[in-house]
View (cartoon, rainbow, N blue to C red):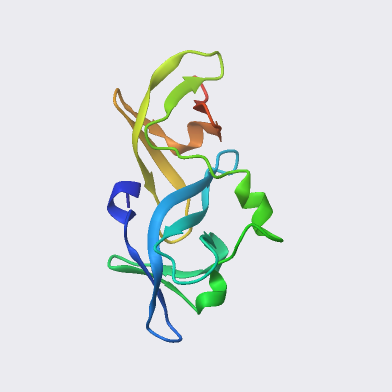
Length: 144
């Protein structure tokens, strides 16, 4: 599944069948090559961060969670995720040697576990295993 396909997808509580919010942005842990959460827009509750561990299923039509308690704020455990809240899409991709290899146009990820499978740039597709980290300025990858 690609970020572009999942953007705007409803997040639904399986306890109440209510929509809690919509997927806005993905939180990526570069060194782990994992999506570790998503931020929500139009959230009906105080929080706007949904840790990946709190997702029951990332389905074709909706993301399901047990209940509204799955969405958190920047308090507690979510503080780790706050430091990773950099947008990936549209960011420059640099090798560790500082060579630009493109701009991220999309990301392919496994909806079952959040593994980043590939970075789709304006120049080429880069395997997810090449991802080193995501920062405020750029996405860093290995040379090959």
